[in-house]
Amino acid sequence: MEIMNITDNEHHESHAVLPVNCGILQVSCNWQVASNKQLYDAIIIVPLKHAPNHRVSYEDVVSTDTCISLQPVDPVVFNAESNMNSCTNSNMDGSNREPCMLDIKVTNCQKIARIVIVSEGSVLEIFKQSGEYETTIFTDFIDEYEGTTVFIGDTTIQPPTTEVSVKFTRTRNKDASMGIWIFGIKLFLTEAIKEAKSGAFNYDIVQTFLSNANGKPHKMADMARRVFEYYDKQETTNKEQSCQKSLESFAADLEYLAGNNKIGKRANEKDCLNYGNNYKKPNSLESQNGIVKKESENCESPNYKEDSKESNIDIRTYIDNKFYDMEKRLMKRINEMEANTNQKLDTILSKLETQLSLKYKNVSD
Image 1 (cartoon, rainbow, N blue to C red):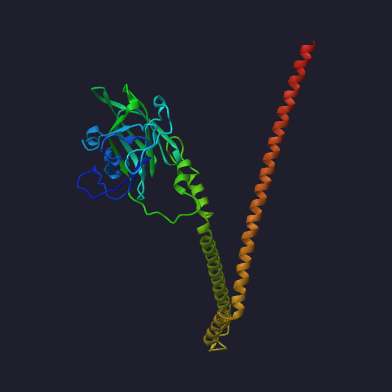
Image 2 (image 1 turned 45 degrees about the horizontal axis):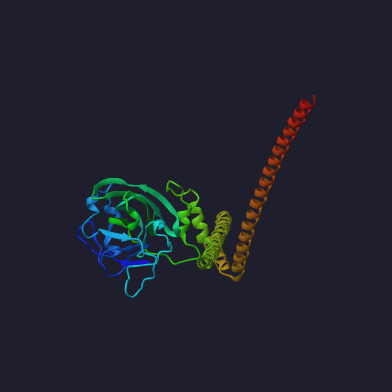
């Protein structure tokens, strides 16, 4: 299979034929290029922010540099060193060749959000990563000249994908088995997003399979993604430690506030007693300050820390009890639903038996 790598470059124009050096795209095909051109010559890329709202004109896609001819590979073994543009066709019958399949993969964290294809293909099938079917394009006729028919197909891909495969399912050319012309392919790419650390799940594929036929994300897709992230092996330990620290911090803050409330309450009680004895004890203010100071010292004592630990245990026990109660209520609800379902089924069965008995009775009569 023929594989080519190409790269993006800074251009003042909205689009340009991509240079040959380096690779943001990996292009492969089960057919071979007939001329001395390469697969990547047919592709141009444009940032998605420059995509027009209307349909793209073929003049913005086709140029003399983007036209390539693809031909099926003859059922012979090619020398890889002498012919880098060839591959082996698994179908030995020339009349039943596999349709031309062009695979494009983005390798620089960008994604393909829209694709425009100008070719001889009247019907194109689009696939995403892992061979997932995306859509079928019934292309628009542009022109016909000397037996060559030109069509243009334009489609958006939602959600955007890193891989696109184009299957040229049908052409109107009489001798389509001998080859097909691709006049230009235009890709609209999203902005590059820095990849997160890889985990146990590929969230891009999960999101794609959770999307419905219209391309809109399912309402449970985000929840499923969060569940996968939570159970990711590399993140589980960090999340557990963070949750434990947050719980301990919350318990400590709660105990600290409770301690301050007790101190303030005791200080207020002492203040009332001292106010009643102000006529007899002129040093009541100093006595009150001493009490508050003593209470503050008690907060820093080892006994206070032990009380804080006990409060942490109490909070955990309280949370465990809450979860137990929730589980108990849930099981009760499930049992009630099951009982109601069984009751309805019994009613249905009894009605069916009654009808059957009446039917047999009428037949016997």
